[in-house]
Length: 293
Figure 1 (spheres, rainbow, N blue to C red):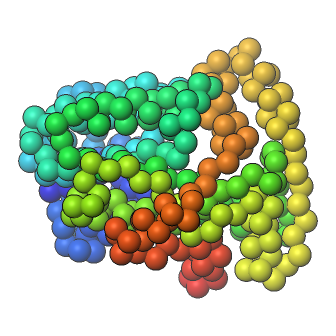
Figure 2 (cartoon, rainbow, N blue to C red):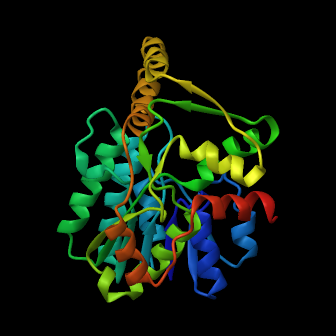
């Protein structure tokens, strides 16, 4: 039995789909308020719970062989959800003698960013997991191609692309479908045991490359509106007086916009060799989701 947390999220639902496509038993940890009908129809066991509640995590871990942690927090819940819930999953997973723990972290956790509770929480989870007596695989994904779908759809309608920050910053835009495949394969590969993988797409793209790719997909010349990071800084300062938690959450967004998150060719080659996968390009992902459906 696989336990998947964050099972209705962008990555989690893809993990559940692929497990069920292989007719593997999976318990999907979901919130009552989430949309989990598709997962239920695919034959997943639905576990309705709250990751902030230790007793729910304890129950969810019963009779589980593999845990795939793919959840993330909402605003202001980094300590409870990103950190504490994962430690509880480790604790109860160990009690149940699981075979493998797959943790979906984020690229850049090892850089020591102090302005983001989420980055800090994920780094501490990584540190804790590496000290536990359990087999693990840590996956550090770069930015998801699925996050660009709303921008791509707006571009399709208007030809306009909005960006904040330096357009020369580089990234390795990742298909969440590839990440899902790597996550479910991780427990089965000896070469993935007790390893950390940077996970990204096959290309190193600058942010100014993205609207060009949109233009190729939709055959339009892009009109780019580029706002400076000072705009976000102003918003953060303004909301800080009324909502300090939101201000801290925007710190994660600023880190993502102000820094580069890309994988080297060596890191991509390692991924493709270990997991026997060909990483999908951003253009291919967009065509598959927006043109071929």
